[in-house]
Image (cartoon, rainbow, N blue to C red; front, side, top):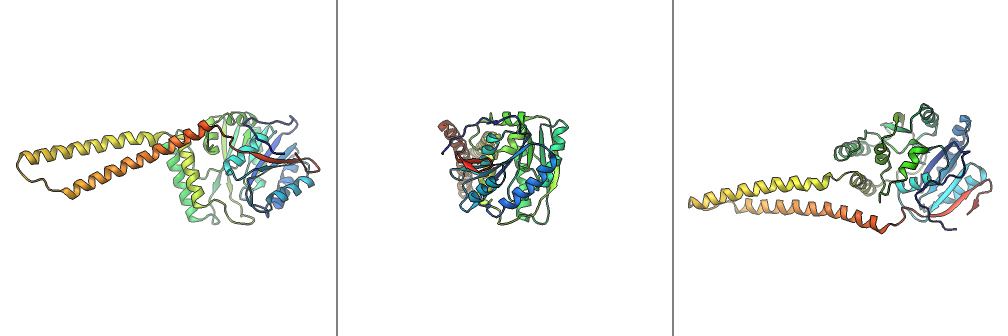
Length: 327
């Protein structure tokens, strides 16, 4: 049965203490290992829990593997999105469905080690509403990934109202209060790392060593990384728009000085040299103009998308329970 999910937490009861939300995209080979390791770690905690696996429009057998896991274990819930809505929206879909008093989000490629969960829970029990993680870069992280990540967080922190440290990730624990507040956001492209920091609730950060990817390769192409970075900055900053004011002032002063120079040369009866430089300056000014028009176009497009009020994700199928019954 097709379902359109809204943006309000769906608690199925108060008996669940921990919810673990895992978005999956073409991760058929990881599902079994992931659920086995989660079952071992969560079982040792001695708390009631659920694992929510979100299939973000996979084109392989990921959904079939999720259904098999649900049929084998009564503590797993499977959500299948109608298409690929993106990592952040898949995370959001799982958070909406989570019933736990604490919600842990993590990736499904096992680079976020399930064995770190007890440390997250320990920090939550100490009164922290948000427990973030910071990954320590290892040799299994490419130089390109390390470099782009480092400078993205520097630029993001410089442009936005939110300070983010290098190595931030979507491996975190959210208290129920943080979850409810987070789901009040109406951003078209919700950047969860920035939104969690923006809340300002009591938080702490712990470091973890990135685990080896169990199978497959990263699904984050350069194009998707660029789209993710632009969406994050646009969501939390208007400084690119204000940049146009300063550029306009600087270029106006330069143009005025050039005009004064030309008038002085004409009054002196001398030929005005430098047509090439004049053309160059005009080209520069038009280039800046078109860049600013492009930036404004991005913001206008976001406003257009927000006014359309489309759902941020659509859940096509839900499976849960000991029998893996679909509803």
